[in-house]
Image 1 (tube, helix red, strand yellow):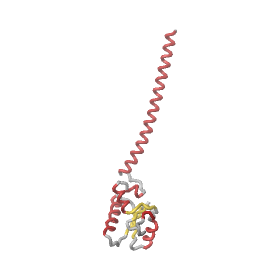
Image 2 (cartoon, rainbow, N blue to C red; image 1 turned 90 degrees about the vertical axis):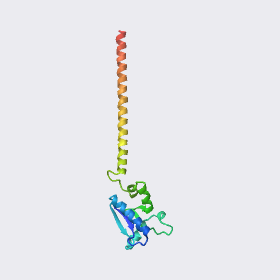
Image 3 (cartoon, helix red, strand yellow; image 1 turned 90 degrees about the horizontal axis):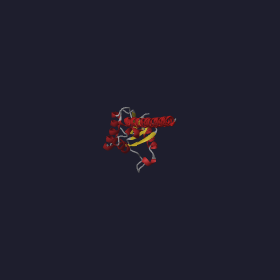
Image 4 (cartoon, helix red, strand yellow; image 1 turned 45 degrees about the horizontal axis):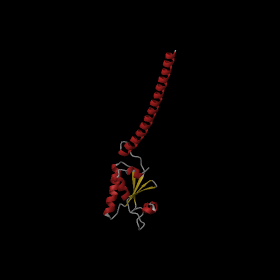
Length: 153
């Protein structure tokens, strides 16, 4: 899966340039496989981006500004949603990617699996202990019956 970042290489807006740099820099730091698609020099990219940003995510004028982020054909979000995901340490989920081994998200996933396995082990152990108790009680009852029979004789 390749992350697509739509940006404008020749944007006159400093704010847009900073947002684009923030997204690209963060993806590089995380070693995420991504592709930059320029909407300033490539009309096809611009049209594709505009057509594939969901209506409810478009600004009031209907023209989404870069950066816009996709996972293949699936829309992830714009800079604001990316920033929120970054603040929540949920960028991989935002991008629709599994967290890499050794990351916090991967560790949490691993811990959940470990907890499930531990719960299953605890349940098995509890059942074995109950069975053992039942066997011991049954053995005690048999012993008492034998003892009582012997005493009765």
